[in-house]
Image (cartoon, rainbow, N blue to C red; front, side, top):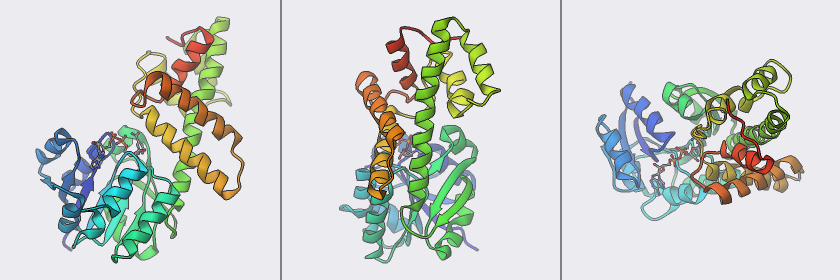
Length: 297
Ligand code: NAD
């Protein structure tokens, strides 16, 4: 069977390695990014360049988007020269974290032009994107899932969450709120121990063998906080966006999210102090600053 032709819009920290994996797997790939250097890198590996989202959809059966914010996804899908206007593509598969309401809005807009939306937010960071070990949270009709399954197997392990647009996004927002909360609370716990005189490495080793262990203590602190590099690979601005979307969705559903709202404010302060482009491990830097102690080792 002839391989599907794929379009990829947004070749950043996640989209760059994910699209490279598709080229390596032999897919015919058409790419678009507002950053021409990102396009050059993929064109150098054999991808075709496009000048608009519509052109990507004219050239591809399935268009994948990996874009930073909901309004950018909306524009790429339904805006002028957007994916909805493309002739060939029947499916738009969004691996960005855009939230359920954007997912539903884009799904409705695409349906008017006979195209199918697929929510496919991912987790696992740049390492997972590079190695093809992401967790994929997919929601779309079962028939569409069968069509996309071989394609998304290149990115990692897929879970078909349900059929309705936005369900994959709900799972993703819940996960990212938890991931951000883990950094914030681990920083508070570590700052207390270190200020009292415990060595940071010893404290982390104990937590990681005990009931307090979490994704921040096991991964983010050893890699990016103890060395003081604050470079784990996920932007504060994106984490803030995710937690904001999470708390908003929770409120819409009538589910109180007191802890999530707190994490949202910690991210707002981290962003105003270190900038939206800083790494989200800078939440720990904020706690260090408030505590007058550095968690290094
Ligand atoms: P990024 O900022 O590195 O990449 C986004 C890319 O989109 C950039 O190359 C940018 O130039 C491009 N872009 C922006 N506007 C565009 C437009 N109008 N048309 C075409 N290209 C445009 O971000 P990222 O870290 O790769 O994240 C992408 C998405 O994946 C986000 O929604 C994020 O929340 C999600 N995500 C990120 C991670 C991570 O660890 N970085 C993990 C899971 C999910």
